[in-house]
Amino acid sequence: MPLFTILTLFPEALEPYLEVGVLGLARRRGLVQTRLVDFRDWTRNRHRSVDDRPFGGGPGMVLRPEPIVEAIEWIEREWGPHRKLALCPSGEPFEQAHAQAWSLEERLLLLCGRYEGFDERIFWEHDIDRISIGDFVLSGGELPALCIVDAVTRLVPGALGDDRSAAEDSFQDGATLDHPHFTRPRVYRGHAVPEVLMGGDHAAIDAWRRKQAQERTSARTRPPRAGDT
Ligand SMILES: C[S@@+](CC[C@H](N)C(=O)[O-])C[C@H]1O[C@@H](n2cnc3c(N)ncnc32)[C@H](O)[C@@H]1O
Picture 1 (cartoon, rainbow, N blue to C red):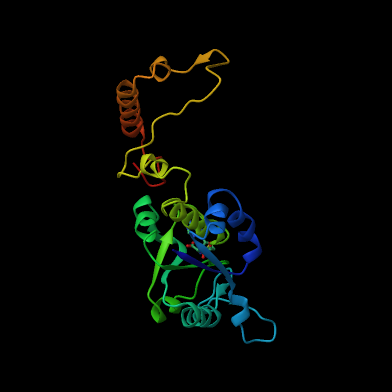
Picture 2 (cartoon, rainbow, N blue to C red; picture 1 turned 30 degrees about the vertical axis):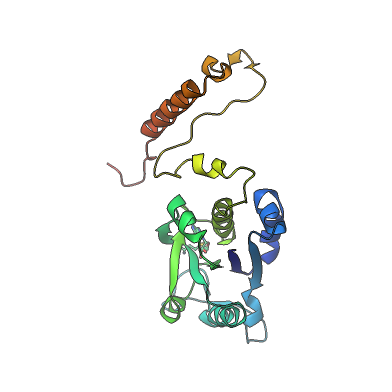
């Protein structure tokens, strides 16, 4: 059963999301465990400050190394070794294949940054992988950490009502995207559900869905990025 330990300055921002939906149910069923740890508790200064000005000058504040390193060491002493991931825009892009691999880990530690990010020396002290959830910058690592916890939890056997749901999701077999879905009503604002889905011919339905998924996959193009010519 995966244990997710999340190191954050804002545990209260994470709690509500962990309570609901697939994630909430998986926790209540004991399929995954989550622990929120506030690294401010490892500060030693009078004001309990976790950040300081950057050496070399420049804007913003940087997370000091000591509370983070000491919190990591306390966590691993108490609960055992974890695979350690730091949320960083400059990290390796998070993909479904990571979620798949991490669903087999016993313990994951997610480090949520704030301000300008982490003092680099936390990466010299511990074996920590940097992970990005996309080429944009958020104010903190809490939303990226929740993305990872959610994506990994979906892949833990029993977390979804029907384990085939995850197997048929987009990216599950590489790059292939999911096919379109329809439910009631049969006609909505003049748009009818494709006839093939109404006939009960499962071979024809499978073939239609496969074709739709292939068309979507080949139609999807990477959005243009600054610097593209
Ligand atoms: C304002 S950001 C720091 C940005 C950093 N100065 C940079 O440009 O790479 C504060 C924190 O938010 C988190 N964060 C922001 N965007 C992220 C992304 N795309 N993926 C993962 N974490 C992100 C990280 O934990 C980061 O330390």
